[in-house]
Each structure stands twice: as structure tokens, then as C-alpha cells.
Image: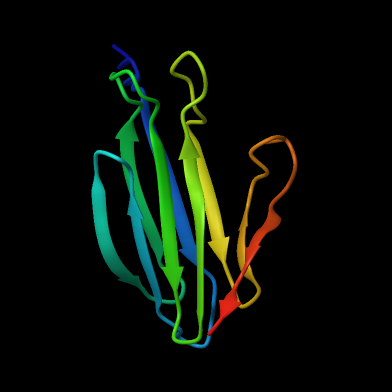
Length: 120
């Protein structure tokens, strides 16, 4: 007898360090309810977390801050849409230029440069 696949409302966020040169990326993501803490993500590794949309009165929103030795940037990683819907998987790539990901207004497009590094 075939097993039925598990159905879940879980959302998945992946942030991939594509910096090369063995550069470590510091990633710190949080929402109003959850602080995921700051973690070091080595070159080629993925910072990954899963969650479910909010069942409270406010929508789920996650934002992240990324840091290198010589650069910083921040962005909104996930926004729950009206009616409790959000995209099931959000993926972002980080390289020497900045953060690449889907355009939140047009998810059918390929990855775009969303935020360049602010050099310090």
C-alpha cells in the first residue's frame, strides 16, 4: 500500500552563501515572535529554517541582517500574504555583489539583485 505524502503548512527559507574564497557570512534573522539568533554560514553552506504562518492577528514577517568583515545589508525574507498565504519556499543567494532573490511583486521572474552590500 502506497503511503500518502505528508501535507504541511510549513514555509521554508534558504539563504545560500555563494561568496567563494572561504568567506564566512553572518546571518541573523528574526520576526516579532522569534529571534533565530546570529549564525556563521561558511562559503557553500545554506542557512535554513522552517516555520508556519502566524495564527495570530498579525501576519508572519521575517527580516534578516547579513554581515561580512567589510559589508552589511538587511532585507525582508518573508511576508505572509492576505488570507494567511505566503510562498512555501523562499530562496536567496549571497555573493560578492549582494543579495539575490525573487522579486516579491513578480515571483515568476528569475533571481534579481535585491540589495547590494553597504561597504563599511
